[in-house]
Length: 407
Ligand code: ATP
Ligand code: MG
Image (cartoon, rainbow, N blue to C red; front, side):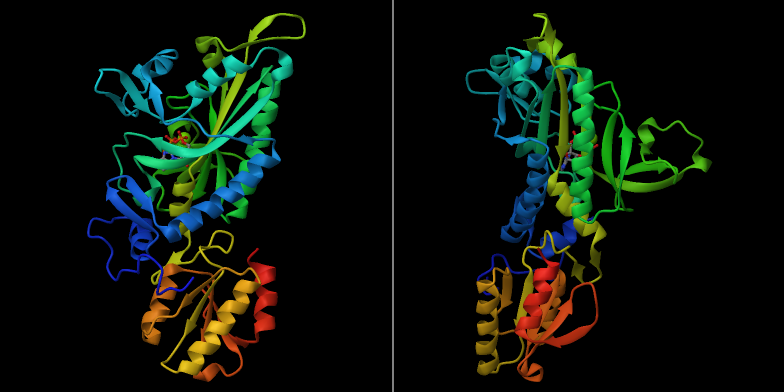
């Protein structure tokens, strides 16, 4: 992609109402745009990052048998009345009437919708287990929509749902999902803790959250070095002096919901002995847009973002410096050769000063910067965003490194 064509261009100033780092940097660098508090456009660069995050999540969901589908976002009131959540989740749900006085809500989650699909399609134990997931928009009436893209009123969620013949089978799969989530957050390079937490409007049972350690977080978690799981402050009862604690951002949450939803909504199957039973149910969420914001909170410096290679909008940022036409031609040749090798390249082909190009490159945060100038001769200057070291390399050497590093 030629940067002269990229929409939009970077901005010198952060919006005056921006309080958090992810809000300031993602807006300045042209990844997101705010329509109103908690409501964001993913601009072309932002969509590239979220698509890569989603692809990592998708691989790990498919690896544990997940089948991707897509559910509606507009829900009738009666489905929410079946579990009582039309009333109990009123604070978080956007509810409204249409011109004919019919009542609807916008999706804040999808348990009831999945249950409805299951009861139409499950007959016997042979139809279970079921693992289905989607990537889709959730709407929530968030009071504190001040943390940039970390807390949207409308945001992206990957939600997986599982249905089982027994508690044992549910808990077995629950542990598998926990493992898949750990793989996802490791691939994203997060320093995170699996954390015991409460179930909010979902369940009165315990749940597990995936908490990324950072001072930008709104949550506080406690843990002991020798124990594998941390505890969220909201359910913590230990002696605080015996525990380590840190601020953290919740990027994922898994819920062993049990039989409650199936009993309320009459979702049953006939078991091996001909007995009719309620299905065991679990749900499992990750917020890809919050993940993008969290990546910025933990990977930035005073000049801009520092994307991990696995989710960076491009693998390489190539810059030609100076007004020399030969240099521009040479850069174009490099740009085309890299693209032929399936490397994703952003080329800053604009007639700007070296300072302006370097500034934009540091702000956008692509992991590798390549500079072509009169000083670089037949080679190209390689610099990684996370380092100050520069090296002169040939095209072959560059390709070798990129193949080892970015895929
Ligand atoms: P929080 O406690 O931060 O409000 P939650 O516990 O209500 O979040 P869940 O219902 O557990 O959220 O949703 C699953 C995942 O969806 C969360 O772990 C998070 O990654 C993401 N998520 C939840 N709310 C938001 C939001 N308002 N904006 C962006 N992502 C969100
Ligand atoms: Mg949660």
